[in-house]
Length: 402
Image 1 (cartoon, rainbow, N blue to C red):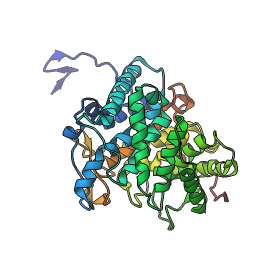
Image 2 (image 1 turned 30 degrees about the horizontal axis):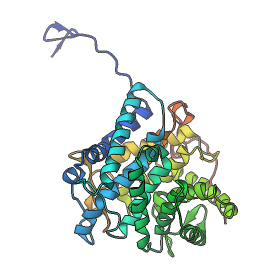
Image 3 (image 1 turned 180 degrees about the vertical axis):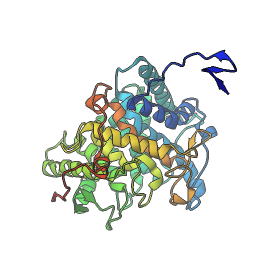
Image 4 (image 1 turned 120 degrees about the vertical axis):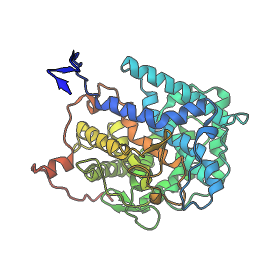
C-alpha cells in the first residue's frame, strides 16, 4: 500500500528516467544475443560440445545433417555480421564489442580449419557443404578484414577447402550461385578461379528472370523468399567482383542493378505495420533473412530513390522485433526452429540447428557508421504504415526489366 508517496511510510527515492535505446543499440543487442553462443563457443573450440543437435522432424538424413550443421552455422553467422566486423569506429562500448567479436571470429575460423581442433570442419562430406562454403566465402568478401587477419597457413587451408567443394554438382536452382560465389571469392583474393562456373550461373539466372524484379528458383516459379535469401544478394556481390575484372557482362549487370532496386521496393512493401510479413514458401524458419536483400541494399547504399534509408531502418527494426520477440525464440540461448518462437512444424527436410542462423543477415546495415543517414535520420513510417493509416501515397506498378 502506498502512503503519501512512500512505501510503508518511508520516503521513496525518485527514480531516474531511463533513456530509450536507439535503433542501433537495439540491433546490436539482438545481434549479440543471436550469434554470441556460436562464435564464443567456436573460439573456445567447444561448438560441437555446446551446440544442440536439433533437426527438422522431416529430416532426410539426420546423422549427415548434424555433421554439416557446424560449417552451416559458421558461414551463415559470419555472412550476416561481416559488414559490422569490417567497420571501424563508433561508441566505446560498440568498439569493445566489435573487438571481442573480431577476436572470436578469427580464432573460431582457425579452429574450424585446424584438423587437430575439436571444431574442425570438413568441406568435402556432401553437397550441402557447397552451400555453406559459399556463405563463408561471402563473409570474407564482405569483410576483407577477416582475410587480412588470417595467417598464411589458414588462408591456404581456407582456399583449398573452398576449392574442394567443386566436386559437388549444384542443384539446378539457386545453387548455381553458390558455386559462382566460391569462384568470386577466389577471384577477389587473387587465386585461380573458374570463369565457366560463374558464367553458367549468370547466364542461367538470366534465363530464369520472369519479370518485375523476380527470378524463378530453377525451372518453376515458387512464391517464397529465395529471391532474397540467395538470388539478389548473391547476384549483386558476384556482379561487383566480376564486373571489376571484365566488361563482358556490363549489359547484364546493369539489368541486375535495376532488378535489385525493383525487388527492394517490393520487399519493403511486404513488411506489415507491425513488422510481420506473409509466411509463404519453404525455409520460412529463416526469420529475418526473408529481408536479406533489403538489408543488403541498405548496407551497400544501393537503395532506389523511392526508399529512404530511415524508412527501411524502421521497417527492418520492426521485422527484427517481431521475429525475435516470442519467449520461445531461444532455448538455452540457441535459436529454435520457427518463425515466431518455436514452431517445429514449419521446418523443411534440410533444416538443422545451424540453418536458422542465416537470419543474422538482416543485421547487415550495422556495417554502416552510426552517423550514416540510415541510423542518424529521424524515424520514418514505411509504406504499410503510411497506407494503412490513411495517408495518400504514390501507387505501385510493375517494371519491364528484361
